[in-house]
Length: 219
Image 1 (cartoon, rainbow, N blue to C red):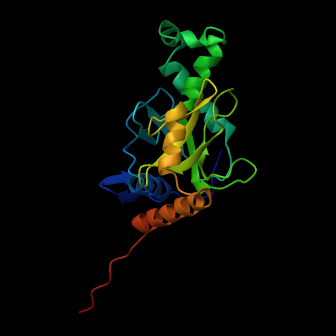
Image 2 (image 1 turned 60 degrees about the vertical axis):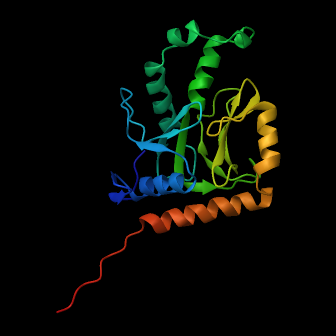
Image 3 (image 1 turned 135 degrees about the vertical axis):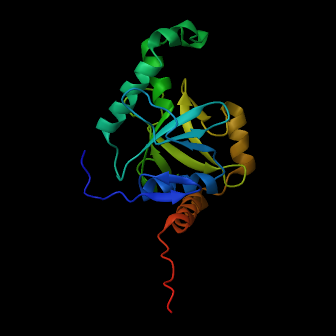
């Protein structure tokens, strides 16, 4: 897909980003206390813009100036990860709980969960969820969450939700099952405030990276 939006290189936190949108996502991650790296890997045909660091796993992110899911971009991400994490490697250590499920489909879903397509910022779609969405997981596979609800736990840190074997799992904080539900009860903001919080942090991220021309010195 071609974009009519010109990318503006932006320096933030000591890193020169290819676009201001990427820099804004970096600022958003910082404000949410989420560790990240910028373009740390080359997956033979795809260089993730970010790797955000979860407690137990990394999430590989692609940033595009879009307000909708881009299947062609998601497919590129998936194909690159298929090559990086071949089925044969997965099959060697597959869990017993997958015994009644198609191992090939499980492999595809696990890969999809570790990928996140980020657009023009967090968004709210009442037809999908009451929670704001960070972006999209590749959506064609069963037991993989189509979207990543932001649910603020442990202060500002959000929970990026995935679905493992039909059960919700937080890709950032590592909460799952009953522990996840307990964490929601203990730390979650009231549901109506979560979208406001996500929007507030996104605005702060904009302020962190917006263009601030130096004042011209007059003689």
